Length: 345
Image (cartoon, rainbow, N blue to C red):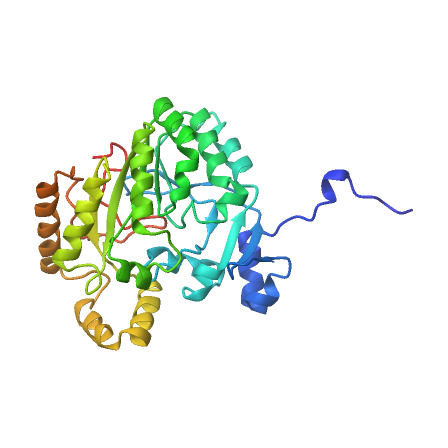
C-alpha cells in the first residue's frame, strides 16, 4: 500500500550547516549546492536549517552572539569573519562574498531559546560574523524578525553593521531600546572614496552609512560609528583620519571608536594575496609590519593618539580605550573587542 507523507513533510528539509560542510568537502561548492539560488548580484544563496540561534561566548564584552547569515556580499577584503567561512569548508576569498548561507528557521529557533525559563536576558551581540543588513535581508527579514523577538523578550542588544537598511527597522530598534537596551554600531572605516572602493567593494557609500546613523539617532536609537579597522597605507594618513572623524561629527554620531587592522589566519591569507595581486609594494611592507596578527604596539598607539586628538578637536564622544588586544579572540568577536558593548561607553 502506498504511503503518503504528512502535509508538513511535503516541503523538503533544508540541510544543516554541518551537512553543507560535509557536502562541500566531498563534492566541491557547486555540486554540493544543487538547490541554491543564483541571483543577479552574482552570489549563490543556500537556505540551511540551524539547530541553535544564540551562540554563547566566554571572556568577551558580551555573553552571546547572533548571526542569521553566513558569508557576506559586502566582500570587505580585511573582514575578520572571512576565516569563519572555513568552518563550512568554504574559502576565505571569493566564496566568502559569493556563497551565502541563510538560516531560514533562525527566528523560530531564537524565539524558542528566548522563551526558555533559563534565559536570563543576557547581553547579545548581533552581527559579529556576518552583516545582518547585507542586501539579502531585504527579502528574508531575518534580522528584523529577530529584533522583534528580542524586544518581546526584553533582551539587550548591540548590533554592528555596514548596512543603511537598518533605518528600515528604526521602529523596532527604538522599541528594543525602550524595553531593554539597544546600541547600533555602524562600521565606517573611512570616507575616502578611493580606499572605500578598493577595500569594501560591496558596501554602501560611507556617507550613506553616516546618514543612517543620523536618522537612527533622530528616531531615538542609540547609534554611533566604529572607524574600524584603520588600514595602514589605505586609511591611516592623518588627513584621511581627520576627514572621516569630521564627517562622523557632522552626522551627529552618539559615539565613535577606532582600532587598527588585525590579521588572523584565514583573513591574513586573503588580505596578503589581495595586496600581492593589486599592491605588490604594499604587500612587502605589510609582511614587515604584521609579523604576527597585530601591528606593533608603538604603531597602533601612535595611530590611536592621532584619533584621540581629532576626537577632541571635533567634539566626538570617545569610546573606551582602544588598545591592541593581547588575547586570542573568540568566534564572533568584532574588530572592537575592547569596546564596552553593554553600556555604549
